[in-house]
Image (cartoon, rainbow, N blue to C red; front, top):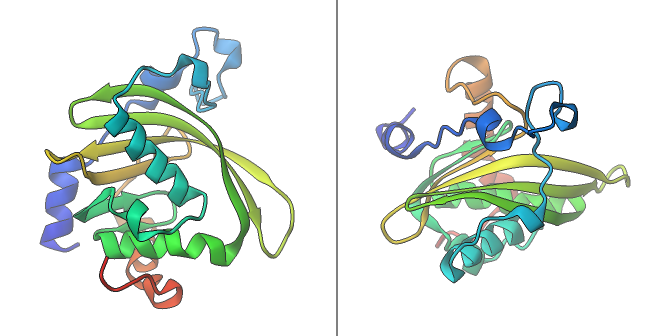
Length: 194
């Protein structure tokens, strides 16, 4: 891992406690892992218009917008971390978002629920519906998205958790995630000036 990436990870990586953020008071409504990532927009905490814009840009990207304008939500030096990818610059992050229209016939944000808004942290549940190009069936995926923000309100670390476990940054899984993040831009070809 580069020293830049290590610095971003050390200083900005959110470590949300998925169970305390998302467990349902009625245990019968939780998954077997004790978390409930299904968003309920009516329960969202109030956020400022600036924070609303951040979430709108992020959900646009999940929905295949891959626009330069939406990409500006990220700081130039930022990390994107999900089960498949680890990207440590805005350009590499763009490689992920510019890839969605290439592999998905559609990707739609169904709902979000903001569960925490702190000075440098924004956490929300999201339900995304993906329809792959090769197999035209739709699959809804619930996740917990945590965004660490810098002093200018730019995203420095974007973590997308699909289950109750936080990510390890070691071993074969990390190597595969980094390879994906480092090389996907060769296929998706985002604009070089990102």
